Length: 147
Length: 190
Image 1 (cartoon, chains in turn brown, yellow):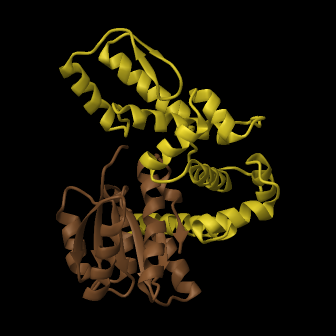
Image 2 (cartoon, one colour):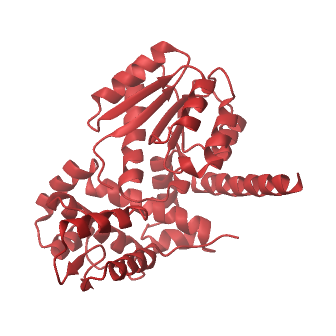
Image 3 (cartoon, helix red, strand yellow):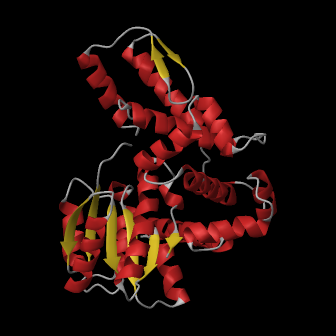
């Protein structure tokens, strides 16, 4: 697939996180078109109604509204979202929570770094690999990554 | 039920069927390269493009993109080949595509947003994942097949690329399958 940009959704109740992620994505050499949501209910309403599906979703694990795990289950059970790469992030997760999130179907789990520099590195690594999955025809069911 | 795909055969078959539907004379050259023995009108080309789109097949017009695709195909060939290719990947790619490796390497980085070396590692790890899930081979056999000097080397590179170990990967996939089976049984029961 020869794509020129990535369509990205950011879902986080913290406006500061949204601004940070937007800034990092805008600096990246692969351009992105970004949409933001502050609750999971708004996000899921949008996903259900929208015909075109974005390629990447960054979602805070503790987003208010429907739980992150329920959102993941809904996304994974609908073939419409087969091409959507999901990235769940949080500051602190137990090993059991991590496993639960992966089993629910996320592609990437990101331990949210506490500073801009590390956050930029993590997001850059994730987008680079995501880009390869989208452009090199790799099997997205096997896209499991932890950063 | 689980099924295993041979992507090369699958793609070739779909492409051949679509070309036959189009009713043009053609010759399949290397993987991903088709020689048309007659030229298509603009409308035919548009219809053919749309016909292929549903299968995730795209006609590449840009020469640079086409060359990068050939590099990717050569890399897949090196990795999935049952026989060990006796030269370094860089020499193999340069000779196969008849360009200097320096040129191919910088073109690849510019178009594919990663280096050839990194792409080779990504593909190797992806192939390792397929084998972990779909073959009965253990990690030692997989490491040998993919030309790693040891299981430790494969595991380290796997962890470096994905952030998890091969056994964690295997466990997540197994748990996902189990959860899906449970959902399926549950939805049938109600």
